[in-house]
Image 1: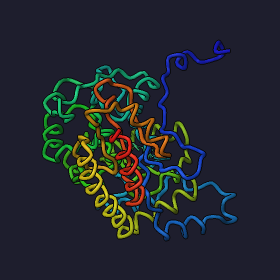
Image 2 (image 1 turned 60 degrees about the vertical axis):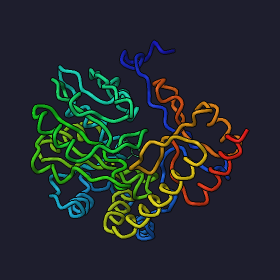
Image 3 (image 1 turned 180 degrees about the horizontal axis):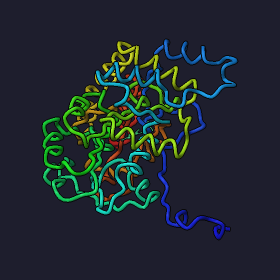
Length: 354
Ligand SMILES: *Cc1c(COP(=O)(O)O)cnc(C)c1O
């Protein structure tokens, strides 16, 4: 009965999120969630919102949360935009800032939601190949474009682009918006937020889903100069004026304020990552350098799809991407707790031994 559909829907290729299995007792290393829970202060703040005030709409502008995010980053609240997960923030950025006559640019291997937004909003795009070693080469982006977007660290590779390279991109690309998606930056990279004051075309997006262990709360944000934020607000208020409910606003604020807690869980994840990489290499895996809470690894003697299926038989789920073909040998594995990594390593040992 697709004859009832709007024309654009026929052409959509929706994003496929990582599986959220209903089975218990799985070692779930497929969607880059944090293995540690959120701050106890977040849980208190969320519980406090379970009150009679739920009959009232939440603050449409999330003023207190934006002030908390601004304080954390040393910017003003006018430089902060919040959304229902950074996916929503990104969607609004595509609509508000990246839809022009010229094609936008992003890496051929990067967050697979970007081409989906382009399909939805009918935005032309061109994918720029990463180098042989899966790195972003800034010179490739210094060509006429309608905008540039990539994650840093990149996903699903985990590779980080150095701050001075991003600055070179900004300096050489003054006429279109550059979006840096910092979903994983808290796990080991230098943020570009400090460059926002100097570059009017820079928008930085962040999420509380990974480093703050709040994937279930759905909060993301963007930082940029007020003229960029205004464009995002125009789209947001043409779509949904109340994207963050009362729980999300209160919980996210508590998390931004409990800096010590979320930094401590990031330190634990990074320590486990170091150990996991070393032990995977012992098993013969080639692991790309990761600045994220996941690793991207392949084994010279085993196909990615087979490894993923074998791990599943051991009740361990990881992410495998069939496309592009260049990354088909790889597995993207979320860094879990030390115990989860032990289970992973034991299973891999059994699998690669035979
Ligand atoms: C996880 C992720 C996001 C989206 O996060 P939300 O949960 O929607 O905040 C955005 N970009 C990249 C690269 C991601 O990996």
